[in-house]
Length: 244
Image (cartoon, helix red, strand yellow):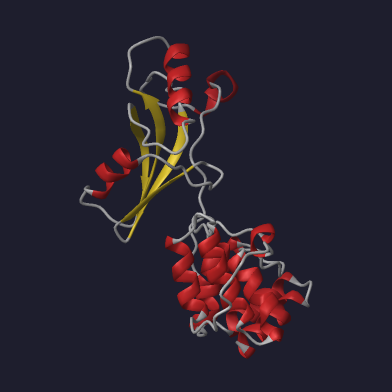
């Protein structure tokens, strides 16, 4: 980790955007460094570990951790509920490291590596390695009608809950537009897992599977979508777009 800390400090200690990009470019062959950047700056990797949680006082066995930072990042990808048992694993890992590396490891696991770069910066230097995209949003026709040319199709506006569903190496997770994980969509995620596509993003709207007017459907959708700790049944996922 000596080299990783050195690179991080180099980027942090310059205010020049061009110099930051130059430092990134010089270390394009450092796979560990790139893996850390991908983990920290990918908004769709959630750890469930915040600064407050990592500092939580827990009764820990204080065993010497033998895990590497790669193993810790992999662990957090699948243990991201922020449970005390998972926090203890992370605390033991950090406390087992040389003191000069502990702050860096903490910033990595809480995804708060503030060195003056963004996912866009990383993608500019390394290519599109981090998923960064915005979903398409509707605009008022009267304000943009001069842009509409030729034939077009009019469909009814769906008024529900906008989500994106990502299938990454066979693993399916749902997120809000802000990148927060959407829990409880087991039925929908199971259906998508069975589709013959992988490494794709589905953009669409959650809609309650009922008959009624727009307000009734929206109210029922919101009621079902906000339920916590349960499989949210009775919802349909209307897909607008697919990113591959």
